[in-house]
Structure formats: C-alpha cells, structure tokens
Amino acid sequence: MTRPPLLDLRDVTKTFSMGGMLSRRHVGAVNGVSFALSAEKPEIFTIIGESGSGKTTLARMILGNEVPTSGEVLFEGENIAERRGAARLAFMARVQPIFQNPFEAFNPLKRVDRYLASTARRFLGARSRAETETPMDEALRKVGLSLKEVSGRFPHELSGGQLQRVAVARALISKPRVIVADEPVSMVDASLRMAIVNLFRRLRDELGVTIIYITHDLATAYYISDRLIIMQKGYVVEMGPARPILDAPRHPYSQLLKRSVLSFDESGAGQIKPSGRDEVDLTAESLIAGRLEPAEDGRFVRLSKPILEPRQTAGAL
Ligand SMILES: Nc1ncnc2c1ncn2[C@@H]1O[C@H](COP(=O)(O)OP(=O)(O)OP(=O)(O)O)[C@@H](O)[C@H]1O
Ligand SMILES: [Mg+2]
Image (cartoon, rainbow, N blue to C red; front, side, top):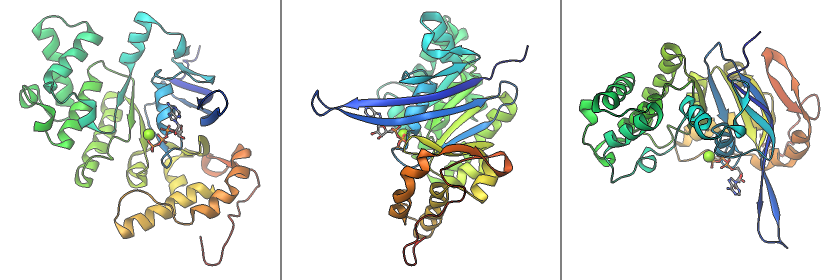
C-alpha cells in the first residue's frame, strides 16, 4: 500500500459571512484549493499572493484552526477536522505554526525560556526540569542558539532575528513533520532574512521537515522554494515548480507580481504595489472562472482562454 500524502488539500473553500441579516455579505477567502505534499520527500512549498488573497486563511485551515466551508484537509490520510482531544494534540505537535511578528507571538511579560518550557510540557508531557530543558536546548541548537543564551531573557531583550529563531525553535520542540510559516521574514530586517530562509532549507534537508512558506517576497521564494502556488482572490492561478514559474510566469497575475517586484526593488519602498493592477483586474474574473490546466514544466495555470492577453492600455504593462 502506498503511503498517503503528508498533507492533502481537496477542493478546500472558505467563505466568511459578514454583516447583519439584511446586509449579509459573503467573502470567498479561499476557493477550491487542491494540492498534496509528499510524505516521502520533504519540500519547501510556498504560497504567494498579495494582501487579502487568502494565504492566512489557507494556513489556518491547514493548521486546523479554521474549518473549511467545503472540501477537506487530510493529514497522513485523515481529515483534520475530525480530530479531537488527544488526536488533535498529536496533530498539532506534527504541524506547527510560525507567525509573522515574533514580538506579537511571544507574550512580552513572559521570559522566552518559560514559553519554550510550556511547549515542551504540553506536547512532550515533560515534567522534570531535565525532561523539559533537554528538548528545549536541542531545539535551540538547531537554530544556532542555546538555552544558556536565551534563559531568563524577555522577548524585547532579543533582536527580531533572534526572536524569530526562538519561534522556530519553539516550533521544533514537538518534532513536527510540517511547519507553516506565515510571512515569517516580513518583520525581520532584510539583512537577516536570508539567515531565516537558509534555516528553513536546513530544516528541510537535515531534519526532513516540510515547510509551507507564505510570503509576498518573491526573492526569498525564488531562492528557497521547491514548488509554489500563486493565489489571487482566494484562487490558485498558477501552481508548480518554483523556478520555472518565477522565471517565466504564465498567468497575468503572476506576471504582474513579478513586474511589481522589479518596481519594488527600484523604488526600494514598502509593500508590493502592483503597477498596472487595474488592467489585470479587468480580466481577472474571467481568468479565475477558468480551470487549472496543465502547462509546460509540470505547472498548472488557470486560464479561461488558451493564451493570456492582458488588456493593453497605451504604454501600460
Ligand atoms: N475572520 C474573518 N472574517 C471575515 N473575513 C475574513 C476573515 N479572515 C479573513 N477574511 C477575509 O478573507 C480574505 C482573505 O484574507 P487573508 O487574511 O487570508 O489574506 P492574506 O493573503 O493572508 O492577506 P495578508 O497578506 O494581508 O496577510 C480577505 O478578504 C479578508 O478580509
Ligand atoms: Mg495573511
């Protein structure tokens, strides 16, 4: 019998209902997302998309923190929504999150070693001091720190980069198969970003951890991803091997993201601000209405027409 995938998302959809009885609105945060991650081969699987494209909602469903409106998320062949009690805790140990802002993830009034200790107690059932501290120190060493270095320190006494590494160490204590990292480098200085993403590579290569890396930073995505999906308005518009897609994106939205990175680099300023965005939005609905079709390099592209023709306005695009 072949092993089931580590994670298997089947047509996962999340719709939020907002407003009152008379002004009810539905937001399709995630629409029909399907992909599977192998149990045999750890990888860095990246989710790219601009703000509001559904990345965090998808991450929350993978972590079991949000239940899909339809579709299912299977972990090692089992629907995670059905896990309760001890089975739920065992799942949480195997699929661990890392959040965007380490200063928010840690309680500012709690020493970081105490935070790590409560993780060891919760997931490993550690009781004695040695039972608690040994896995803490092991996890910290995997990220280039040690218990001695962080003991007694409050979050604000560590740099953003150090604290994000402590967050990675915390996630490693329970020996996870998957780490879901939601924009883990966006609050970290550019100079430290590579250190964190290199750490993800090491976790993949040395510990066999699969990383779901959520970002809108195409540079680090290009550098570390094995495969990726590009999301627009909750839909996957392009999916497959990372480098071929980022070298030559096919979907207009993917192309737009790539162009906006170039203008982002040139200006050196803040967030991704796609230029020429309106032109793509004009065609977005019909493109989203299409199906994901197989294309070159083993990728899938959502196209309602065989070849994309983003609307040209004089000089734009
Ligand atoms: N709890 C919620 N209730 C209602 N709407 C929500 C909720 N969570 C997310 N949404 C909506 O779902 C859509 C997707 O949001 P999501 O946070 O998943 O996007 P994102 O890609 O993570 O964005 P960002 O890059 O800003 O983090 C947005 O339109 C958002 O407003
Ligand atoms: Mg988000």
